Length: 81
Image 1 (cartoon, rainbow, N blue to C red):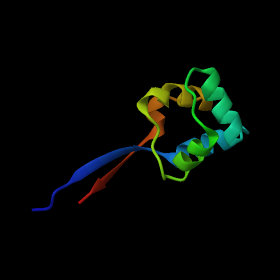
Image 2: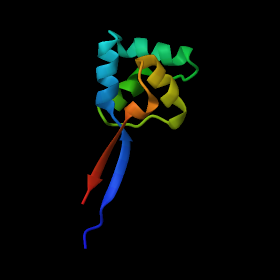
Image 3: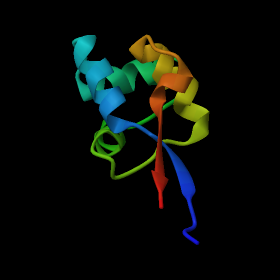
Image 4: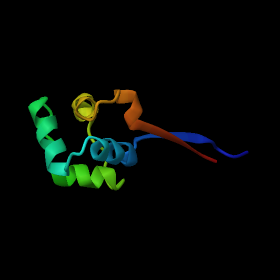
């Protein structure tokens, strides 16, 4: 019997699209998150957008606010069989 599992991760594409929709650079987004109390380096944001890293839960509210979206919108789920 196959073992189904669901993975929940942050969608880098959602962050990228939100950032571009707002006309922000990675440095702009980094500065906005910092002003909201969640310092996150622009190079780390780049890795998140490319799916190479995941942000810590602590920065998710600021990241969502900076992008004008809900925290839940940052997540994506995938099911592996």
